[in-house]
Image 1 (spheres, rainbow, N blue to C red):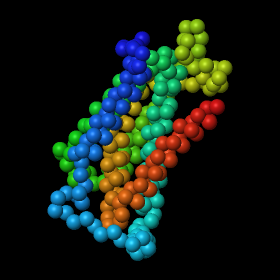
Image 2 (image 1 turned 60 degrees about the vertical axis):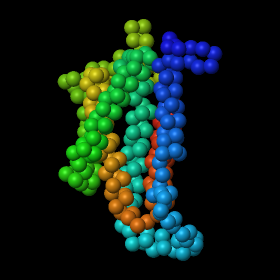
Image 3 (image 1 turned 30 degrees about the vertical axis):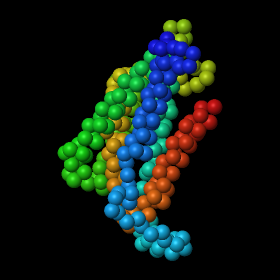
Length: 258
């Protein structure tokens, strides 16, 4: 049922999020364009003189050769893995909740939204510890990085349907209209699941905690490794690996499902 409807705009549980993101993007664009200025734009600051292309490339090449290539490759690989992991979770969680827990699309969207709020709460709490409690000085990036990986590994382990608490996935029938369709997926009748709200709570807590640990520690280590290098180029390469994973995972999941 639409919450608000007219000839130009329909606001409901699906389009509401899109409109909210649009408003936030407009606000962010305004803040960046009007209120954020780079140090070189400040009054009294002298702009860096342009460097010819060939000397600039030669300097960058010599700097790159002096870096720990294995560490950079590891960070790029981990960036793509973490980005792909979050993309995979976002891609499968709604159909997984619908099919496995026998929820309608609307109910599944509501449940996933509540779980996402939980992820946000725990993420904000962890980021708050880094800002106000100076968690980064207590736990260095070299250790918070493995902590994030350990939390992700724990999530996968706890997601395994243990015999004592798991139950069989409801197969699609007249009583379970949104259940797993055995005519489409051959594994429906042999698949087991953990209690739904226990699983969703566990995902919210561990994902919300692991995500900021992973992102903050990765960016900290990467920036320290680069130091004097052109951050624009190297951060673009760093971001590109994540974008490739974000685009590849949903495509692979779709092709695999087909």
